[in-house]
Amino acid sequence: MATNLRWVDKFIIAAIIQGAVITVMALVIVSIQMMNNQINIIQYLSLSFDGTAKWFFLGVIFHLIIIIAVAVTALFYSHLEITLQKKFSRTSNILAAIHLVGMNVGGAGSMMIMTYAGLAGTGLLSVFTEGKIGPKYPAIMDSFIEPIGGFIALLAVGVVCGGLGFVLAYRNNE
Image (tube, rainbow, N blue to C red):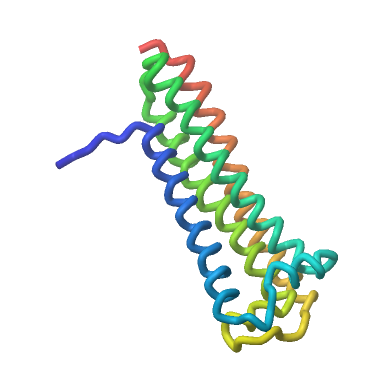
């Protein structure tokens, strides 16, 4: 049974999956908090916002923004595919695929690494493994710069390819 999903459908599905991922992340943190009443995780992170904790918050906030961006991108594809009834050429399909992968893998990957780095640098990662706050380790951020940069580069390539794909599909007169 072959299904021909439009790009709008693929981007909506991706936004739903991304929303599920960040929901699971939030539920894990809330569950850990509920099982460990000696530590107020969010209060601890809020009070140490000047250090690596800001990477945790920025990772979560930017991940939410990426999810919204993926969903809004589906509106552009909806306009092209449904409203204007534009056909995607082979090239614009390839660019749309790069867009889908770049936004989701690059965007979510960089934000998850930022979130993880923030937890690791504040010592809160050990709450998940040992049940207590470990030592702060701000130097850990140095080891995450290249992976975060790589994923952000993938995100940028995806967005640029998506823009090119939009233009090609819009100008397609078939």
